[in-house]
Length: 480
Ligand code: BG6
Image (cartoon, rainbow, N blue to C red):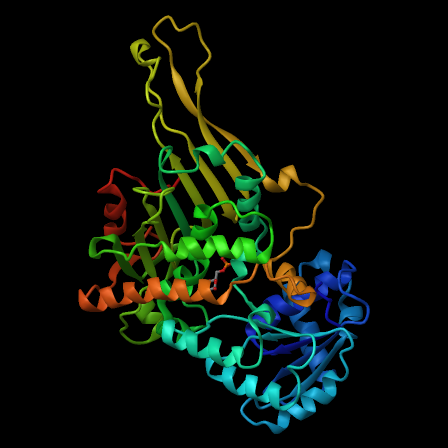
């Protein structure tokens, strides 16, 4: 049985993620009575600060990032917080940290959101101070390495102190309600599963489009690029959830066993199945924005856009392409999965002049949370000049279907599961490694074939080659 921890230790407590996501999530959970009364939260980072100063810092972040209607619990939440400055590379600091954490009668949950270079020293420090003993679990925020080898190194270091059942690798997409809803859609309905295969599905599209550019993450992003920043983790997790076999239960082992099989079945991408791009100056949402190189202040070969045609080599998905694309400075912020079904085998309406179009299921993940099934219907009329059919949507907007429920951000769910010890929505080591293996092969291909990013104007849907990648197969990206 998982025991809910009574201590939460946040590394990187003054960082961007802590300010924008972690502190607001914890505060919101607290206000809703979802944190145990005895949970204490200890923040740590390099900055010298007293607990009082940290509480002021946290208050400022909460007032900035929490919506006004969720600020009620700030004072109560701040009372749980304390802060200890630690230089993560010196062992001595961890003793002071252990003192502040004190006895954790039920358990300790650690959240590590620091630079990758600090992972190993932090683990050493935790071991040194006895903070890995007892019911201790650790959450790891990306980036967990930059390729398979560096990811293995980090995983090995963490494994020296924590068994896999105590390691919680975060992919915040798994904390999103609509991503979890994919599992409900597939496995809580009879309707889809019988047709969820190569016999009935023509192709799948996964799009994660962003309007933002580099933001303030110059160093990180230019070393990473879209493939490692978005495809390696979030997009492959989405693909795995779409393509996996039904697990026997909603249990961390059963779900992750099925996801990893998909990730291992990914066929290496061929030269003509990948397109990369980098944005130039343009306009997004009517606003002029500079090009990537201008934002960066130098020339760069880093891709801010990538489109891929992937294949899952197994019985279910033989011959079904999975088109994936993601990019910065695209015309709109949208994450969606499109499942394009095949044409009906025979149309009884053809003789009456009517054409039919194949069904399509669009699962909107953000900003719209909806499920839309396009179906053919007869246009009302007396049909004197033939039957007219038209494609119409069966449209379910999640917020309307579940009005009155609180919209939670991904980290609320993930922090609660980390504190409570449920690993289902966290990524297992074998999954991460299968993801890296596939991604590393793509990067090697780019190097060998000298595939460099093509320019695209900010505010467009990426380089024209990305459109051609799908159109060669008679497929159009779902841009409406
Ligand atoms: C992060 C990436 O993992 O996900 C960012 O590092 C990206 O580059 C972000 O902007 C997107 O997350 P979301 O939840 O806004 O879709």
